[in-house]
Structures are given as C-alpha cells and as structure tokens.
Amino acid sequence: MRIAAALRACGHVLGDRRGASIVELALVMPVLLLVLAGMVEVSRFVVARIDVEMAAQRTTDFVLAKRPQSADTTYIRTEAAKAAKVDASRVTAELFLECDGVRQSDFDGYCATTEESARYVHVAIAKSVELQFDWAALGALFGSRVIGSTITVEGDSLERIQ
Image (tube, rainbow, N blue to C red):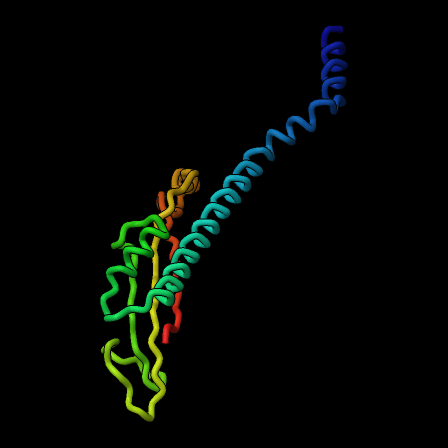
C-alpha cells in the first residue's frame, strides 16, 4: 500500500510542468550572460578604436592648419598623445616628401621642376584597453589560452599637406 502511494506521488510530480521554465532559464542563463559580456567587451573596443582613429585624424588636421617648418615631429607626437590620452611613446608621426609618387628620404628637400611634389603627414597611435571580463580564466576552464588582460587598438591617419 505504501509503495502504491509513493508511485502515485512520483507520477504526480513527474507530470507537473510548472517549474520547467525556471529549469530551462537556469540552463540557458550562463550562455546569455557570456554573450552579454562579449557584446560589452566588443563595444568597448569599437569605441576605443574610433576614439584613437579620431585623435589621429584631429592631429593630421592640426598639422594641416599649422604647417611644419621642418621634419621635426615632436610637436605632432605631443599633440597626438594629448588627443588620444596616451603616452607620447605610443605615437608615431612622420613627415615625408614624394616626387612623382616616389617617397624621398628628406622632407625638407625639393623635387625636380618636372616632377610633381607632395608632402604628407602620417600619424599612428596605439592604445592599450583593459578587459572588463577575465576571458583567460574562462578559456582555462576549457583548456585553451584566450587573449591576455589587455588588447591594443590602433588608429592612423595620412594626409597630404602640400
């Protein structure tokens, strides 16, 4: 008699579907949270990349407005570092001359009278962005090495100034 009552109770519990959606949510929630964390990380890097790219473009516009008098790029690197909020060592700036599309070694030089001359400024900025989520620990759970704790985003701009 007790066994029959226990079987009826088990049958009643197995037929009850009221908690199924909670169990499904508990199974899917970790995946949804990982997707959300990934979207946040990607959006942060896209924004950082756009910021660095815009800082490089602002710097080349600055050089266009304040024409260089020599091949010294110190003021350009300083301006780019301020615009991108990075150390000046993370900025590369170069001024160069092209004669008929051929790059010359001397920015202050001149092209032959029959050649078309063009002077350019190129600014490249690298910025390290910290990860918000510890992806390396997640990768270690699955036995793989993912990315480190920072990612470097880069932006550059090239503009003809003459």
